Image 1 (cartoon, rainbow, N blue to C red):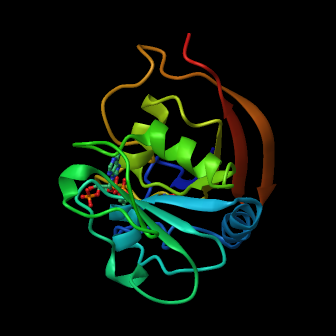
Image 2: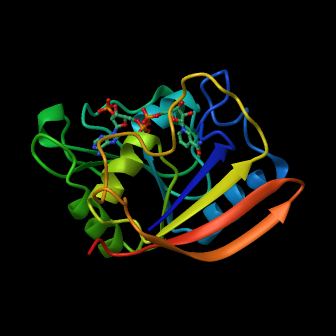
Length: 195
Ligand SMILES: NC(=O)c1ccc[n+]([C@@H]2O[C@H](COP(=O)([O-])OP(=O)(O)OC[C@H]3O[C@@H](n4cnc5c(N)ncnc54)[C@H](OP(=O)(O)O)[C@@H]3O)[C@@H](O)[C@H]2O)c1
């Protein structure tokens, strides 16, 4: 599983409009689309799919939602969408609805099912809540992060939102690639197993 995010230099995952589109750059946009092409499916939290107005595309989009609400923008169109939810949502299992877990989506079971369904290369596009859960579950192999040459101030969410992870020193990573274009720093880190 590879996660892909963009952040400002001061650590914000969004611009003043509360969306990531306002802080991304041309180079980041190319990386975003290239990584989709390299993936078997896109995994995204319902919050991000709603805020960013996700639409169906070439790659299957797997939307994680405990409440079982598929964002309206994904309700129709060309391309496959899977709603990954849990039994407490009251939804019934079918081709487009996967029930994984009782009261909360079991992310390990979901990833295993994606692998069994021929989609081992998962691109997680967030958001910060889902990314926290995936990191906490030890499911993230790689973290692609673009540092956008912007400073937004304010009180905005970071790319990971939730309780502390990995003890005082946090989770450990090692760098795999680092590129620069027009002031955007494009990095790829491997997430190391938590000792
Ligand atoms: N900078 C970037 O690269 C980047 C990337 C993505 C998003 N963003 C920004 O992040 C903001 C959204 O943040 P967010 O943290 O709310 O996004 P999120 O994680 O996509 O959405 C949270 C919602 O997704 C579902 N969800 C998340 N984790 C879940 C889990 N472990 N199990 C079950 N359901 C889960 C829940 O939906 P239900 O309520 O339906 O149960 C939850 O309310 C937006 O402003 C967006 O623009 C930035």
